[in-house]
Length: 92
Image 1 (cartoon, rainbow, N blue to C red):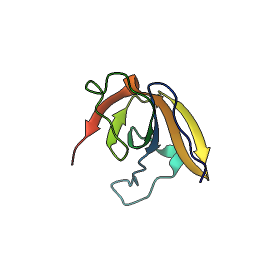
Image 2: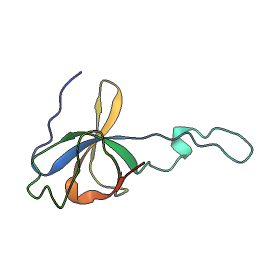
Image 3: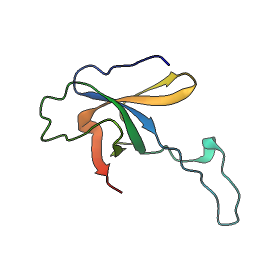
Image 4: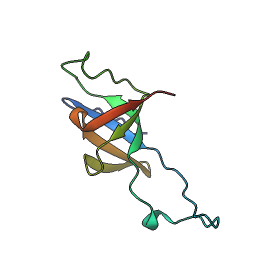
């Protein structure tokens, strides 16, 4: 796998795909689904204020819907996103 290291205050995130079904049990194709806004953090660039943005590799986050740059690595979808476009951290 190619290693991607985000520069500056950016993150490399992998969107979490959720299977969508209608009430009748029909699985919707990707083209009919909304863009996911949940992701797992794969890599973290240099964050100046680590107390303000406590984000580590493996964290699950919610991000702005149209933020970041989508890239493909080994046929997997990833997004390089500015840390300021992370809206929340998901704790389970």
